[in-house]
Structures are given as C-alpha cells and as structure tokens.
Image (cartoon, rainbow, N blue to C red; front, top):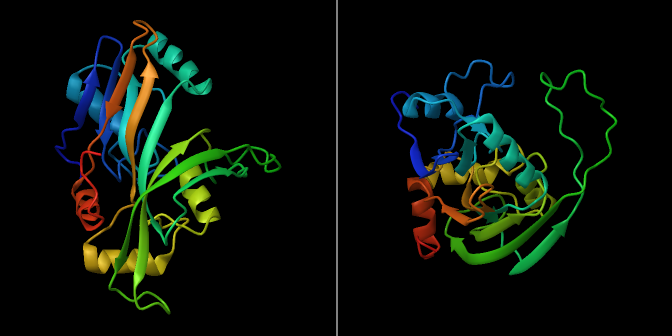
Length: 245
C-alpha cells in the first residue's frame, strides 16, 4: 500500500517537520505489528535524507498531522511542550447517532497495556484522568437500514483532547455510545459493515486536522492544518460541510 509512497510535508523549518500521515501507517516500528514493513519515521527519513525524531504519535488507523523534530535537542524541547499541555490539537470524526451540540467528557481511562510491549508492566495501575471537549459540526440521516433501524444517523464532530491517553478519543466516544465510524476495536461492527459496502469506507473516520504550538526557539505561534483524504472528502460532501472549514 505504501510502496513508493511520498509523504505530504505540510511544515518544515530548521528544527521541525510535520507530515499529513495517511490512515493505516504506523509512526514507528512496533512489536505489536511485527510483520509491518512501512513506518512514517523511516519513510520520512528516507524521503528527506535526514534522521527524524518523533515527538508525539497517532494511532495507526488515525490520519492527520504528525510532527517530528530534526535533532534530539529539539525533540526534547517539543516533547516537554506536549507534556505541559501547551499544544492544542483538533480532530474531526464521524460518530454514530446525533451527539449533543457541545460537550465536555471528564472520564478517567484505565491504562491500556500492549500484550507484547508491556508484558512485564504492572496490571494494577489506576485509571488515569482524561478529558475531551467536543463540538458537533453537522448531522446526517442516511437511507440504509442498520439493525432494527430503517435509517442511520451520524454526526460530524470536532474533538479537542485535553489529555493524551491511549485511544482516548475512540474510548471517550464509545463511553457516550457515539462510536467513531470505522473503529474496529471500539466501534460498532454493523455500522462499519454498512459504510464499507455503501461508501467504500475502509478506515477509521478520525483525522487530526489542526496542531498549534509555540515554537520553542522563535516563540512564534505555529498553526498547522492537514487536509483530509478522499474517503473523508466523500463524507464531508454527504454532510454538506465546507471542505476547508
């Protein structure tokens, strides 16, 4: 899928570089996907001919803005910014049902351990504080029967995480019973099947659209924005939502 694939670079300066990561691409090599051969970190390194250092991550099925540093000192400085929550991240998602127009989720999440990478970690960790702010952007009703319902309803929602827990947005949407479309881990299989069959949607409908931060060196406010892929564009058209919003 990613053979000879050229990553879209959306920002670059002396210290940092950001790409628009496609859905299905791992950030770096992981024991969880031991048979995977394509990684954003290696692909970007080969593409620009320079080593890169990840400062945050996106789940494999999530697309959107992924920031790297170009040296270890810059990576440490930016990682500190993420830890102190001086970064603003915005995502868009398509979720099941009509979600409230605005809301704030304050729901602790248990620590998710990887069976391989965390096999020696304590299984008794307490749930961690997690908050997500959301705003409904649009709603739609589709003429496709799912389960006992003759039609299906979905919401286009903007998600702003206030913490950085593993799979936080996906788990918080599940907590509200507004599962993200295409989520094979926390979602609803009958809805995923419907959009695969009728809309050729074979991905998680979660996209990191905006990343804002103060540059550690120049102190300039940096605003990065990543365009959505073709599958997303098709859904945005269904919602009649402006593509550049």
